[in-house]
Length: 378
Ligand SMILES: Nc1ncnc2c1ncn2[C@@H]1O[C@H](COP(=O)(O)OP(=O)(O)O)[C@@H](O)[C@H]1O
Ligand SMILES: [Mg+2]
Image 1 (cartoon, helix red, strand yellow):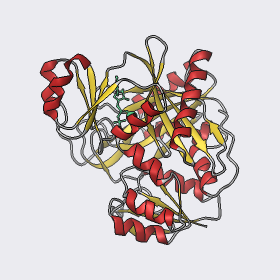
Image 2 (image 1 turned 180 degrees about the vertical axis):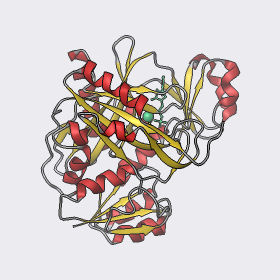
Image 3 (image 1 turned 30 degrees about the vertical axis):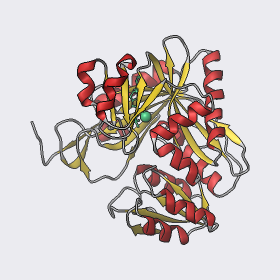
């Protein structure tokens, strides 16, 4: 079986690590020959995942094709599907999800709870929606890791809005951000991972801390699970999906957004769950039975992101001390260069309870830092 991955970042890298357990020949398409996945696949193809001909030619060589980022050429995937290449997630699911306007419209059409929104084509239109403030303006396409998301609280903030097709979404009074990963097999069977709870770095707007399973009242958990299943049903595609949700201050569950792929919120599953999200996606791609999503223990996840003020060749300060810690698992993504906010790796911490893993997560956060010895910008 020949499997292709569009994109060669850390998600692709960890998918390839899991692929090594099966008889599958792996292909990666990515522009950067030094990318995290380039050295773990059988065949690395240098090229643009947004270019029709490049994606089409790449896809023609494989039996099954998946993505590790949504910003791919969907038209090429549609043609490949028509010509018998298995594309997971489906081209139409990617088309819907990669544009936040389409994504929100899908939730609305399927009565999936999500914050009220209006679509804006250009920045000047924002003045027509003053009653919507405070709100969050989200670029239709091209945003990632908080880039492409702008908070508009008052009229004076409107000039910061996007001058391109975007979604203006009512600000949700968030009590908790959670995510549920759902696996959908080629036969339509489904499996849910327990929800994770996310905490964000307020300055870089990057997820930097996560707890699994999330502590939620049973009713909230059931609601979140039902909503996550409704999302994948609406998408009508096999694959692995991460459904990001808000629990608001009234206890309501609202979908924020969905990723049609392995996700940062599932890194901990490598050690902390019986079947990792990566193994799970491979099972889906190879048409094997879905794996068991049970947690082996409570876990926390710390993202290793490039420290502020350091640009250059990456150096992992405190690595030795971290590696000495019990039940702590370090993953470095093999990126040569660090810069502020860049995702350079992650650390999973397993433990007996929430207090235990949170304590150790804080210890890891203060011990392990990604800096550079070469260039220090004050
Ligand atoms: N409607 C909203 N109300 C309040 N906060 C929001 C809202 N939408 C997004 N956010 C905040 O912004 C973050 C990034 O938004 P998101 O749509 O997930 O963009 P990205 O594609 O960058 O992950 C969310 O994780 C959440 O913290
Ligand atoms: Mg998000």
